[in-house]
Length: 223
Image 1 (tube, rainbow, N blue to C red):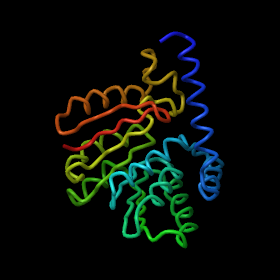
Image 2 (cartoon, rainbow, N blue to C red):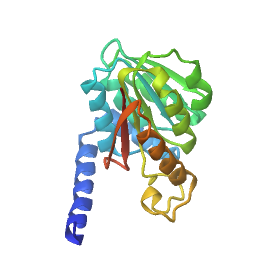
Image 3 (cartoon, one colour):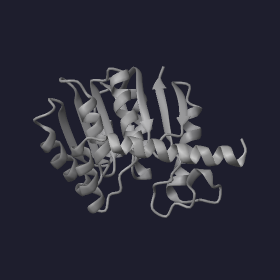
């Protein structure tokens, strides 16, 4: 690809993101505003839409969202679940889990999805969950969320269950210096994502795809 192609791809990314943001429901825009005002930047709107679509494509009924203040993505997942669905939100930040609970409370008249919101580290809480009970796991936020979630994924997911890792290119983390794309970026998240990518792609229990939505999504399906 030449420079013109790269420029057009950058413009396309911006267009898709603006389009997705314009289509977000008012309650999601409100949740985004509250979270960002509380010092918790929210991820890509297009990424949140894709995660919600994955719930519908896979007919998921039981979802785990592991994140650090990922309010908008969590609410998109809640709205995508059917009437008997359950979402377990695991957030190591007490402020993040409070925002998720508050935002969910405002949606309760519009959804019958059950929310279980837990203020805990993924490494401590996920091992306590029942095995083969979940259809989808979404991981976001601090680098410490990722490896523990993958360590439990094969046990927690049903056959053909899916785990999705957001910000795989480590572009959202504080102090990012180009993330995974820049070999000189040796920050905590960039380093963790490089190691995680190699680990997951080498794991024969999963089929994987790395895609450029948002700041990079790695989708892994349990065989």
